[in-house]
Image (cartoon, rainbow over all chains, first blue to last red; front, side, top):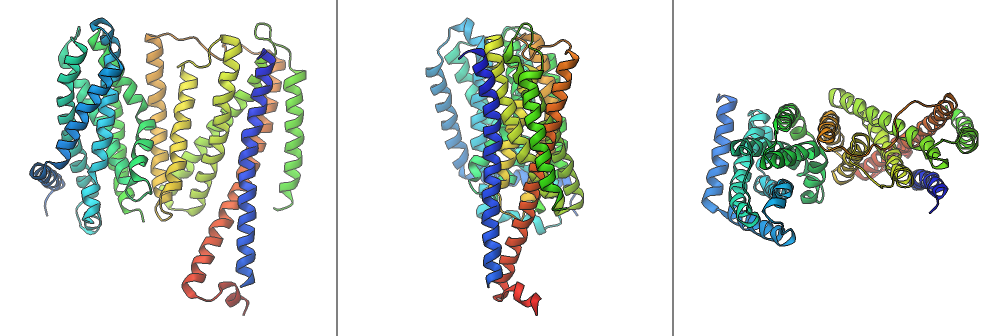
Length: 42
Length: 224
Length: 233
């Protein structure tokens, strides 16, 4: 890997990590919202 | 009412007596300790000169494994008989219980170390170039460092799922400075170099974390 | 309150984009290291942000131990999670920078090792939170955070002395920074700090909501009659 390759890899990894975390947050939000809908439905 | 130290001693002697009568844990632990030494000796087979450089690390890793297995046993008996709940409602101060457990573990692990050390000396042809009594000091401070936090984390792990893996998960990261100090101190003494900084660091670590454990144990015990 | 969040998100996204551009284009190329040095503009702000978040977790944990305030517990949890994310970034971008420049992936120097230990402590913290039963989790986690905080200076000292005895290569370069580089560094730090704040805020709202839902479900199961209907009457 050329040295600029390492640079892009580092930036990419940063955003992948943050992206993965954000995705887990969003998915849990969706799940909580469906739970709320269930409660309200009762 | 009995003073806290009395409670500590009473609990400690109860544990020691129970252990002595059944000898369950100590026998299996001793055999485990022997196995660890043998496996390590197969894996790393240095000559006498090299062994002084790496023995410190090897011995303490072996002690660490033995300590974790011993610590996991600590509360097992209490949990089985719901003794912990009895302690919580009794007027006895939580710290007395903690000290008793920690001291019991300390004695237990020290026995294991005393059994493993001659084997290591034999398998690695170890001969210390520095004063051997300092090694005893390192062993004492180092073992206490592992045991005091280990007892605390074992209590914390009690009501978690996967409690046996939880203990080393919590203990290892927190113990890193102590482990570094133990290993470096042992290596330095074996090589005949000074180990004063590491011994002082170990002692400081022991002071800091013994205080922290005593301060927080009651809170952790009551947590529900 | 709810309108601020989208506005801040847009601002933060724009800032992050501009900061990235600054890091890749505006910042001058470093003489000895070349373009790879630009990793620095992501590595260092992530480290600072992670440390601030862990510090926040420690403060929130102490507050919880003293006052048993559930909000403090949520703040502690949120800061730990986001802190671990940022700390992971630090631990990966560090070696990616070190390898082409200094030829080694890793060295047991004081900053890298302290960061690694901090990461280990907080991953253990998160595992403790996941594996313990919900009644005691806040107290146990808070106690662990205190232990972690006590540990950090000891880690620092032990590595410092270890390094004086066994010198290792220094990673991360010393020396002063050109002003232009400082600006880009601070810009990236601002952008990442705002990003971290927004992520923490979202996670906080999620956790609060999640706990309220759990409580409501528990109440429903207990009363066998929908709570929401009762309050509507």
